[in-house]
Image (cartoon, rainbow over all chains, first blue to last red; front, top):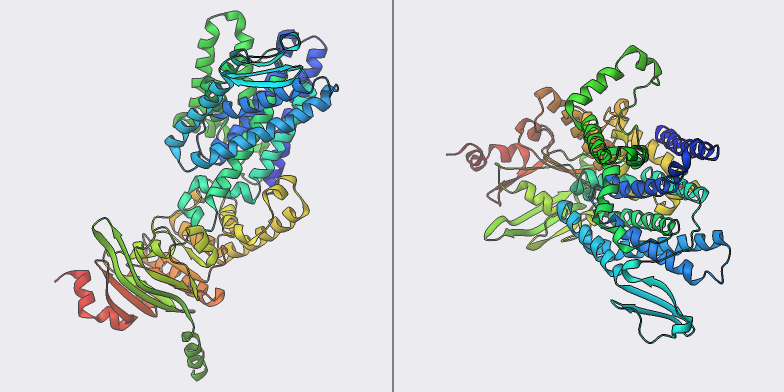
Length: 355
Length: 265
């Protein structure tokens, strides 16, 4: 336990140091405005990938609908902020309320979707979560919310009819999405990111996390030692959804306009790629993979069309480096060199090192 | 000696497990038919029979993996027929598996700590917020798990991944994990499978030790007759899903019908 605690602190430290250095560099003007602008989305993407890692790496279920939960959080939080824009004028109070409401909404969706979905396992679960993710996006695509002098109007599939045109303000315009106040700051993102990381890492290193990993490793054996399989799968799934919802709130408040088509399955797959390449179950890996893979296409933007080629090659190389037996043996040989042996702590750490 | 006997007869008056007319049918196949079993507290009971006789199916019904078509299972006065596996474990039956089922990607210590799951009460929220009860109960779990691992001489490997243990130790770890759930009745499904004679002899000692020191009632499935005749006080022989013989181990193993079932005509 001591070792995992130490590892968790190191992971948090890496994140903090990364953001502190980046913000110093950007305020000194070294980083350039384009890269500085990436810091907030990187933070949000890290929150997403660590939350997805809880479902995929710890619980062991492939979820392809993570963007759906983010979508719920983004729009519930966004609509809330727009509605209270005039009454709650302090942006920090407003976004904290939005985060809480968006997180709870995503948790409720996670719970409702989790009940049927978690009856399935493996490939079937993956496909059904993909379906639910698309359903959420499609529903968001058809929501129209307008505010006028008489109150708030809501309609599906068409702009709201009979409104008082003079005082009407569009809040949610179907496929065009919402224009939430831009309340997200880098500091807030880093704070929420640290909280999410600590919540997930503490969860993993507790009775609940062990129960989830036991279910992942052997479903039947987990039942045989008295683990309530349904309960713990649902707990992990709901927490994962809630944190994705929180990331969604930050996301919708960091963009001028947010359209539902952003939350398609490509988005879920992108996050999944971060998680898989960072290493299933490894929060530190998710953090590093997200930073590298998110920043890469932006750094190589000058290369034009070649950048996606480079991106793809990096993906393949990382995947091979992580999993191919040949690369693993090379890695072990490098680690066995006297120089690296000296760096290592005395007792050989086996497994769970990166957790 | 006489005192010992008196103790034994006293033990025999209390029944740990009573199985009555247990049947299970898969489609047209009656896998287990009219199975009866009575195990007293503290007994070491063997369930033997040729391959495909339905022994593991009986285990799966006892632990709730399969729902019996008919019949009843009473554990220490409590009817557990048709309950869920997790609930049956809480009621007091723990098991090991014929094909080892450890939590492979978890450490040896964590495997046992999963077994201790239901004995500690701190909630998910307390775990996330690291409230005092988390630290207190985690410490207790660590201590208890280490204690159990010591019994099986596994405490030296507690930080290793379970999948990195050699075969014999994996079997032991499974028993340790089952014991961690604090059961009344322990089911061992072919504990000696794949072991050499030395390991089997060691295992026999371990099983006896568990029975004596943990005050355990044990039901085991086994093909190794040396182990069965060495430690089981009573046995039931299953053949084609039906009971062929039952009684004192030595008598049953010499029964010509049993020998025929194993070796053929």
